[in-house]
Length: 185
Image (cartoon, rainbow, N blue to C red; front, side, top):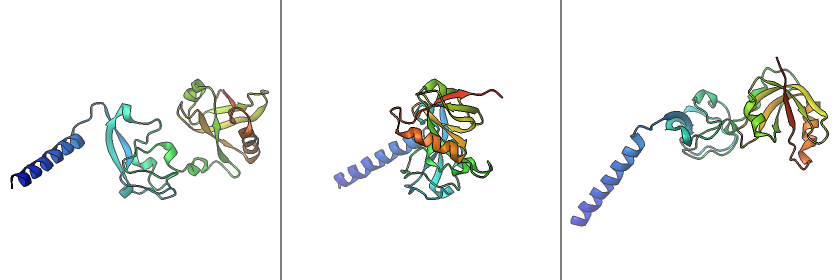
């Protein structure tokens, strides 16, 4: 009987510690969108698959989604694990080109210089040049979204011809990276 009582008390203690860990206030906490269960790639993200959790700012990955509306109704771009913090890259990006006109496509452009990636923002206009010969690959293209410094790049809106020129860069020794020149208003 003593072993049983000891086991029950031990289980209660573990449960209490776990409850305190989950409900304890997080200093410098930020609400972030997390998956509450595993979600298959391509699955539409719904309220029952997502939750807001307060996490330490230092625990958030770059591009973490802080509002559920940024993910609701959009398909997952990859498998999401239960508890995973969602980022911009976890949701499909086809909506980026909605309303931009026929023939416009979103293309990921790798950028070698982290300082350039860090200085870009959605809505900027840029010129894209070949790092090998300086030739223009695309002029005055719209930046749709910017990746983290680690990702080193941005999504840009281009037409089919510009997309082909950028795709041709993919086989070069620099991995398709381009030089980006920020244009003034």
